[in-house]
Length: 473
Image (tube, rainbow, N blue to C red):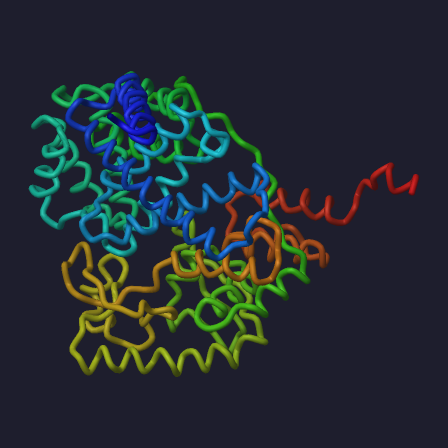
């Protein structure tokens, strides 16, 4: 006779099976969805056990605290998954989708309903690509073979190969290639996997379905639009593809989280080492996380007190102030990483990755000190395109995890991320009376309207309107 726990488990998976059917998960995939949920359950049980052993006994958590804790557990699980060498892009997506269907669609839990699942998937794939976890073979025939293994017919699998080939001719970044390829495969599998070339109408229905069924963020849907727009225009030869009337994801206007100057000071005081220096640069120079990760030795201009950001968002270069107070620490840091550089050269390790065709024009540049990463990875890794063993820059998961630990140490009760340091950089400059156009240039914003959001944050912090309660007390 089954015990109570077994009965509950059986009932859960019967319900889950129905959810999978309702959401069109193919028969041959359902057993894997169940395995993913079981793996997530074991991970969650272990995490909760660890937290309860280290936490305070008898303290009742609020619902808000429980929701936040679940999101943190989920992010940690995804980070763990992306660290497995056998996990590919579609494995990551399938794992996350399995958990989403269990918590959001089946159980309707508040944290899962509020969670931006599209952003989670994007971050997971973005992170995995940096470590070479997402496989994008050099050989186009292998890309076509992999697309066919995922269930695409010959014509549609060939279309994936055609798009990747065109992107490589145009020198698109590796991240963009893997992202667009993943979007195309998702779109083609959504429709008829054995069909011919897709139509614009099919693409619009797919994009609309993302907004209705998957409830994705507008930014995530925009990635899909860009990928499919490239397909129709550059690969299929349709000069002006019509994506004018599909159902768009609802734009969520969010005020950015900003730290006060005292909070930034406290946060930096409890941070040290490589990550501490990263945080100081992100705040002191207004860098995005990946802009900081991709810095090279040559990008530091000590003589003019500038930091050169190469190929930031939108492929643009810009200059931003180098904090004078950081110069001694940076010079000491350069001495430390030069030892790593010298060890690599003595060991005959391949030089660092260089953008576009630079490695062909300047054959030995990748082995030169000036091209070495400012924040090199502590371990060597496989270059996903050349298949050479070389040293990449540090993985962005390292500062992302470190800043959460630092925020807890600093007793800051806000949702602190690396990007919050950039928000704080902009807000503090405006509070100090800097011109908004100058701040726009320093941040690398295409449109000043993007920068104007910080004026709203600044006004609220400055107390533009006082509460009537203060007049009574």
